[in-house]
Image (cartoon, rainbow, N blue to C red; front, top):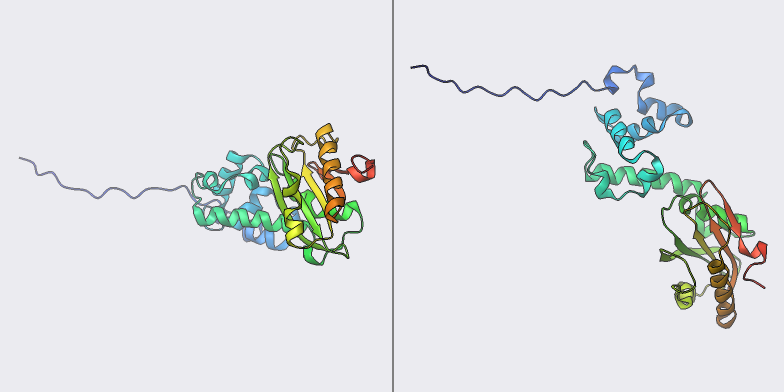
Length: 238
């Protein structure tokens, strides 16, 4: 009778790391540190991810989410489903994308003085232009038109039947703001003000007069840096 011997299973074979096959100067971390503007999205993601499978993981992320915008808007739980991505890495990726957006708003909002609609648009358009659904935010200003805070009031359809005007002014009253600028995005990228946009603006302006908090403008933000000012167009402020 033959004796059956127990054998140790062969170790799992992983494909060779792509990053280790590259010359040093072509590796994502090196390129991101020397010429970040020339890097592809894959290279930038790989530099953030790090490790031996960084290129493979970056490719898998963009294969699933297609664009950095969709990756930014994805929930952390969805990002974690990509092979090689755990909870800490997912959080690191979200943070890296958020840092890029924060830098685009050009610094410390508390030191920012709003002197034109363009100043206000520059604070919000980079992030709000990426959002997949409508959000309404309010920029709170002090007596010198310095930004106190940007607060989110609504997420979802922005229309006159759903918005409670008191909620728009709630944070402004609490922080003793003297003025506000309303901002909301159009995910369709068509920044043409709708009848609801105009009606909401008119109601907010009238309520601000009663509360002694001036509604200075209402901005509509689209993707690609597009925005419009209802005040400049004379809509809702007459």
